[in-house]
Image (cartoon, rainbow, N blue to C red; front, side):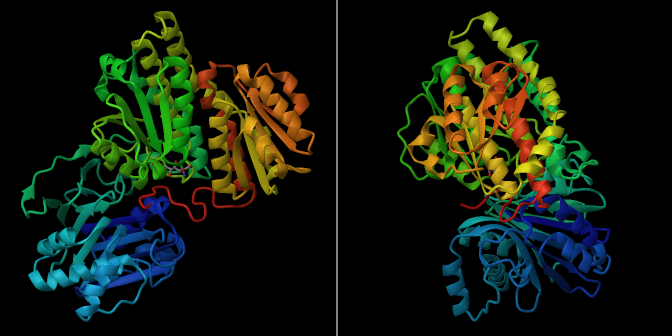
Length: 611
Ligand code: M6R
């Protein structure tokens, strides 16, 4: 959470910093600030509470803050409530050292005590002020920024991407990183640092990824990287092939709307990266059929929507490939003591590749000697780097906090894995294999047709936007779809919603259904349809207001519901890719109808790098 940027070069820093922060606001948006070294060689710090627009207005889009070297920050509060005083940058008493930080300093209490004993005073409630003063302490001791950053790295526990300016070292920015993303880009005109690629993509596509326990000195047009032994390390930049427009709204009102409409393309791109001439090809991930045959159990850990993809994967893989699959929420998994088998394949799913709990689950599996595979969207992210094998989703940058296109791209990877596992293990023959591949390849055009059928959903959204409680019910794969539909609705519309396995409802929760309670029944799995219909009848006879999401042809369901939405027919395994679309659109239109901030819902951030 939190986004950091930095620039040193020939141009005015403040407009570049504000522009970069605007691309990182998805990481946190409760307060923001910048520090620029002014023409007199002093650090000027400007901070505001609230969204970045407040800071931008205060600085007249950066025009009023002169200077060519600076750092900036957009915050998602962890230590201390959102306020101007808690906003970054933080500084030492004479402002000769200023810093921005993303992450959590775990031993901040111990460090604060140490510094208090040395005469330091603290003004904010943040761990970042303590981090800044630790750097100050070591700088005063060693008189060298690199030494100060090395000492910081060795002394501090937790996660950080920290950028520091020292008044004694004009036009230079020093960074250190552990478990929070940090990238650097250099051009002849200037150098940049950021928490994520979109912030600097318009200046350079050649990105250096700062690794854990590394330090960098960033100068105009140049970056020097060090390890904690103070040795210079040579790094090669990675070329980023994302569209420049990918991180812009491109005429859409919200990123979420744009990203939903990008789903046919990202599904196509992800399929194309995994299917070659009508056959699945996992060689890029170095996953051979022999390896797939040797897997006794798949264990998936992930968070939020990525976890929901795991639930879909469980149903499909067990049914199609007859391989047992366990799915866990990563925050639980990491603190369990799971019993791993010798031939387990541990799979972590993450859009950002930085989610703290997913990363910790991956590390735990690795420590236990289990083979690991990551399904990740962000190139060079921590999870991508640390897993034994990686399959990249081709979703491009996803800015909206509510994930849509990354979820859809992740689903594709797990369809492909399930089909290849089934084929490699002889559970399906060549004909079935080819048929499943064809059906997958047809998904993008079916997704497009669902996306174009949004007028009725827009209308229905206005009818339900005042609801207080919503229940999503379904069985099997439909239950997995419900999980995602429910999360989408609650995170951006603030309507309380729950996903229930339809058969479980009457074991308690049905007592909450009363006149007008909205129940959304998802019925795409025909073999379970009759049972789900009975459950819908039960809630309807208790006064529920029912929406039904089903496949074309199930027209009798209209009798059970006030509003029915049909998705095109497809293979039942792949129905989640179609069924999730109307649920995303519905959530979007409810949020928009309520006038809420669709892309930046309250209390949330895109990348959850804290526990
Ligand atoms: O970056 P990750 O995929 O690891 O993120 C996991 C969750 O935080 C994420 O899916 C979250 O649930 C989304 N906001 C849901 O829309």
